[in-house]
Image (cartoon, rainbow, N blue to C red):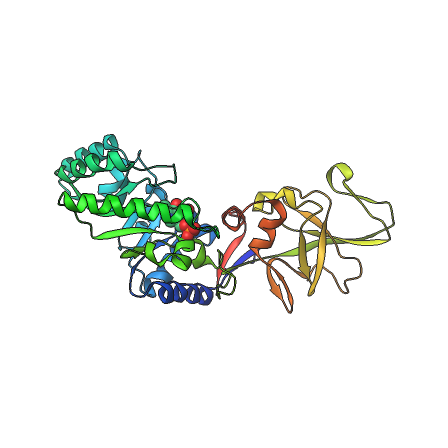
Amino acid sequence: MKLQRAVAEISLGNLSSNLQLVRKKTGNKNILAVVKADAYGHGAVTISRHLLKNGVKMLGVACAAEGIELRNAGITVPIIVFFDTRNIEAFAEYNLTPVVFDLNTAKKISKAASGSKKLIPVHVKIDTGMGRVGFNHEEALTAVPEIASYENLRIEGIMSHFSDADLKNKNFARRQIKSFNRILSELKYAGLSFKYIHMANSAAVMTLPEAHFNTVRPGIMLYGYGCCEGEKLKPVMSVKSGVLFVKHVPEGTPISYCRTFVTKRRSAIATIALGYADGYDRRLSNKGRVIINGKFAPVAGRVCMDTFMADVTGIPNVSGESEVILIGSKGSRKITAQDIADDIGTIPYEVLTSIGKRVERVYK
Ligand SMILES: Cc1ncc(COP(=O)(O)O)c(C=O)c1O
């Protein structure tokens, strides 16, 4: 029985091609592929398996629960957990690698590890200007050696994160690299070295080779978005739905909640089976557009929870059989997550990670 209402088609071929570009830019550096937030909405288990098949050796997730999902799917490579200070017991139990950025949590992890008689690998986070989590320069010089002395922890990696490596002006990003380098050399002087050193997100993979160290940490570029015109990133996700209903209405007909759209002519209006609860942002009301039968059709009126309307006047043969492309292309017509992000004043990360659970992921 086919219960599909809307699909997100995921092109594993495009994922491979984007991964190839990471390799081209970084040579033989280790790739810690970022698959947090369900691989930016693409489905963490299948995406991770595909990346591992193509030579990726480490994965990055936001929290222990995301790591556990991958472990339960049989994935055995190191999984780095970027932001979790609560689920301490899970790190040892599921062989996860937490990122530590405060001594209190490091102590708790060490204590939990001593109970289970395990040696927990950790990566330490240095804040060089992101202002989110991490030891600052001064703290790092005392905290990192202290963590290194904890019996049940082994510092395997050290990392920092860029605030604005995607900007054209790289001054601040370069200052962050300089600061990270200074901390690394002072820690080296104190006798500490690290198996994995990483700082580069996608923007830095593409534009800041001096930030590649021995490991890179790309996310968005794997999924086909990011900076750098001219580079051949290929969007991995297309989102498609169908037409529920078509009506032909006279001029002056109000459409959807609060009548923000009123037809200016005799019109054909199609109701599409997807809404803001599926991640089709409500700010696309009277703003977005879709592709139906190879033609653009503008969103008419407010986007609803499960549906929205599109003005298909003049588009031939729109029916319940018509495919509606929300993200993707048909012939020369194309809509990207970047286009949608531009329409509503956000970034493609948010557009992709908002695509909801009711939209079935189909892998190609
Ligand atoms: C700690 C960390 N590393 C790497 C990334 C990947 O960044 P991007 O998707 O810009 O490549 C993220 C994403 O937000 C992150 O939080």
